[in-house]
Image (cartoon, rainbow over all chains, first blue to last red; front, side, top):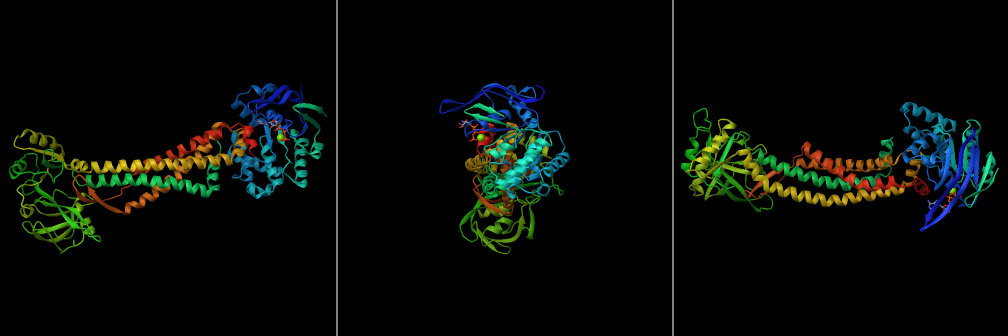
Length: 227
Length: 388
Ligand SMILES: Nc1ncnc2c1ncn2[C@@H]1O[C@H](COP(=O)(O)OP(=O)(O)OP(=O)(O)O)[C@@H](O)[C@H]1O
Ligand SMILES: [Mg+2]
């Protein structure tokens, strides 16, 4: 129990489509250990993103429990859940999802606006995070002035700025060329090995999955093999 | 916790053209709105400053205007002897028995005839109206066919200048002076000697009597005396009140017409703002999902978008008010329906009007933004993120 950070039991989720309920996840159990680097794989439409969204607390399951550090997040109200996300989850998206009107530094700083930190300290931390991803020289750049790989690195800096318990990444290299993808995967790997972050990454890419410590395969809403 | 204000500001800046067009639409409405209020204010200002608070104007009961009124010599003499009436340094009561007639003069340029007020005033006529000052030439000599004309008459009518002659009342009158009425209604009048005017226009009675009271509080006993005296079918009004009432119908008409127009136009501007804001929400759906995922609440999203729309209103309002303020340089004239005479007045921008116009603008921003902002805040996070 001690080193299980995410504990999922009997998780079920379905979507309504045209008046019919389409099951996506059915009675799913999964444990994720603290400090793990987990790759979530499976065919398109198998429910990988759905599962990741549930773990990250941006979607609600129909049934089941989902404990993170002993807290069942399925029982949290909307506002508690928002507060929980702000302090426990770092998001890395396929399309980076940076705010185009904010500079790299401001994008990284944004999650800290929700904390009690003063402006000065927020800036300092954001600068530090940007230097960790090797973008100290791009602080004042807007997303449109950065390459895809650079934008994803800004997004990673934003994801780690609050020092969250979990990092969730949905196809973080899906929109990148080989070289940039390799760099991003190196960076994510280092967050795991050097900072000890627990990482859950959805990917289609076998080479990306190889970087992970464990791989979970989803097929038609059920786990088929856990490595 | 709120999304930084700079986020809303920069989004407006990022789509400069849309922002400019939307705010421009609002600016037009605010311009119309403010201009109408300024016009109404200018009209009231002009007519109110026409009167003095310690002057009482006496006209025939229910006459409404000086032109329709008649006060005979006996009545005038009774008024003159009332103890409430102030005396001049020479011991003579400060009273001006006046006759008001409308004549027609041709306008400069078009030559189109328009009504002008001719006022025959008594000896105290100028003393009772300290705001009226001779700016060129001199005042008329009592008992002569000399006249003085108001500044805006000289500007707007042809053949009116110092030294020129005017024909009316079957006589020729020489213009010996120009006066400035201090932006009051007198600016649109021609003055001469009351007795000469009575003769020329073959009248037997005065139109009105203007008296200076000992002090402003003597007004009540003065009116009471008028009502009690059966010989006098007269009523007294404070000069300020009389002129304010004169402007009432026209001011109300301008206000109602202007506000109706403003409201109709504002519907267009609100719809414009709504379209802009809906488009902005649609374009930024993934951004909204991202902000929510990062931990920002629905309320913060609502505020950020609403604030953006309110800002559009503020920008539009500021441009509109700035545009309206340039109207202060313009003087316009119109026929005052209550006196049937031409009256010149200007647009008058007061802090109250600026406040009303800005409130109106922000109100349009609010109406335009509230539904789109609510839509933005209602989205489910996963749905919003899938829009990427
Ligand atoms: N908001 C939604 N409304 C309706 N159906 C949905 C919704 N989200 C997901 N689905 C459906 O649920 C199923 C699983 O979707 P999910 O996005 O989790 O798949 P995925 O494994 O991430 O696929 P991909 O690899 O293509 O990203 C799909 O059939 C999808 O159409
Ligand atoms: Mg997916």
